[in-house]
Length: 385
Image (cartoon, rainbow, N blue to C red):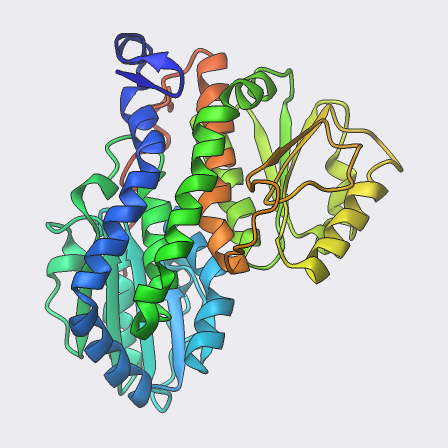
């Protein structure tokens, strides 16, 4: 078998097989997730309708990569439910629960977790029940045997379990991230899920461009002599920029120092980080109004210090000649347009692939890139007080 243009035997030798398989397998995983949610629609819809009729606030939470899901989902969740929705990492909830939970505010806590065994995961749901008089729990997880999936919840709860292939074996969250992100977006409009089949199909088509047609381009970019990388995204793709930052940094064991920002925010000081050793990565919106702001920033990069290389991903061709590599996901004349937030499911593949190939370029093992054990698949050493 061949994954990401590398033979399985070579990937085993390189310590990269699991991560390569998990990155490659995401389009098929998304289809399986969609089918699973359609089958479970009645059960999920019943819980969601009950919860949404009872609460006035939604909190999206998780730790590390799982926390970034909320940043890509919160806008869509708020629009689709009509309820105030905020994304707050469990690492904030555990240390400052009183700042996010109030007894008099009925809350739906949506928890995202690959393993469900991170210390903060269970602590966050316990604190929600302690500080909220009325709290519903929706658990989106990849591990049926995890602490979060098997927890005895005090309040009304529902566990939404992803297909087994979503439970990544490699250190870096890849399929688990995009899988839980897709689940969250579909849950926000669960009553109309059958209408989203075309969206999921389009996402898989977009993914194939990155996973089949543009691997040489991405690998060449990853082999560049950059020491810094900056990822930019607007709205839901700000979460994509955050997750890409983490992917590249953890897959290179901290060798590449990364930063993320919004296009507008980047002008307010962070732009100073750019130098001749910087890779600049753009995640472009398919919302024309948003895109105007993004292209303004791209054009402004001609002023000041120049990055080593600029790469971007968009659904259409753009007037951005200063970008060294622009990956276009859509086909000429393609009329169907996915909602902006769904782009986050597929564009993160660019960040994953840059991280994967850069890890190999540095002589690391993507499945377990930490040479000192400083980072692990499940966080260690956290004491809950």
